[in-house]
Image (cartoon, rainbow, N blue to C red):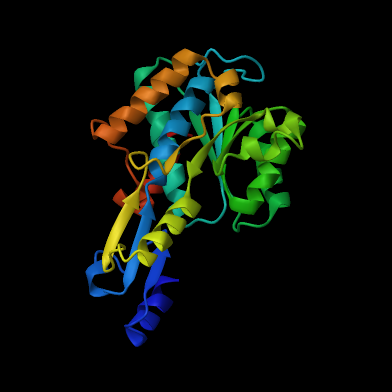
Length: 273
């Protein structure tokens, strides 16, 4: 929506606007003094998910069946846009990080639905990846992603959810399905939008700026629920927590899709096949 907002915000300079998941204009937030731009470092959460997935696939997770240590994991995205690519790049970099440290290598299968609504197509893509021995699939496809979770239940394989704690969503209505959602990469957009609205009402929200939220702000991360704690051994959870701390401190920098050209993104996926 940013091109439309660029026009509208100039036409109505006395109105205030908030846009998220993008900057109003690349590197030019200050040129729009009535717009507050919000971006998220979803690549950081994707990285932690990639580390977890790679450890599951290479046999070093200590997790029980249906983890089969096949050396293969999957990613299914909705549309090929920058935000979904950012999840995927972080995930791929987490896998690459583990591959460089562990003797075993994990390969990555990537698929894209082409939209955020076709759960039937997403399920079909997940069935292909599971049939090709993916130990776990990370899905970032909004409503379409429910098809991937359905495939995980049907084929009795693990899945990593996105945005909200998807285990908590299903744990009461469908515990068999919920138990296969190892964790979710959280992206608390609602909290940020709500807090920004309250800040504006209090006269405290700054405009003409770009703000970024990730692990350090507690907005991006892995869902540390009872299922995650039950399935993932404490040693691995502590290892992932250690990496999280290194990212927050700046000791470990996670590559973003926005650091790469599209050719470099595709090359990254290719090297992990």
